Length: 173
Image 1 (tube, helix red, strand yellow):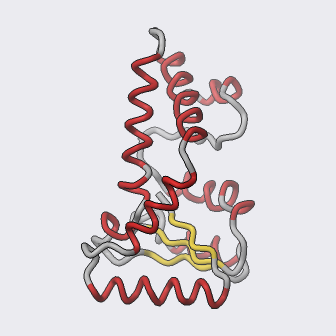
Image 2: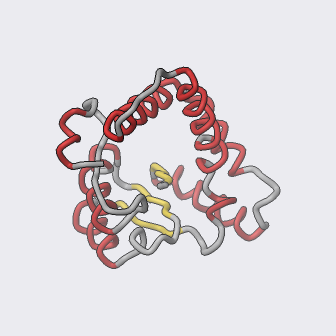
């Protein structure tokens, strides 16, 4: 993505440009400061996988300085696939719907046209996602027997704390 293309993209989503397609500290910091801020109520717990930039000292500092009563909590190592319900319950259907939309589209030629088409496709598909699909993915993930007993206990305690302190659980990608 070229920086000069960003003004041509649909308003609403957050766009960031970097050399690789992977999350890095700069983009994650932007997410914490600009995207998460209006969405996060305190007190809250932000659950994140163990990607280095997610659990860096800088990330903890941003959370401490910007969000009074909000905490960054990494998931236990090697548990993302079973503890992060968005992986299968939402992202799988999202990717499938994106492929379906891509097949319906007309041909685009240039790289810039392809990027814009992909962005518009992702926005359309996300807007078409049913809230119930997301809710059910959380319910399924939090009640699954594939989670070891100790982690079910920990999740149960987190949910109890969330209810007790009215914590909003925000699961990060």
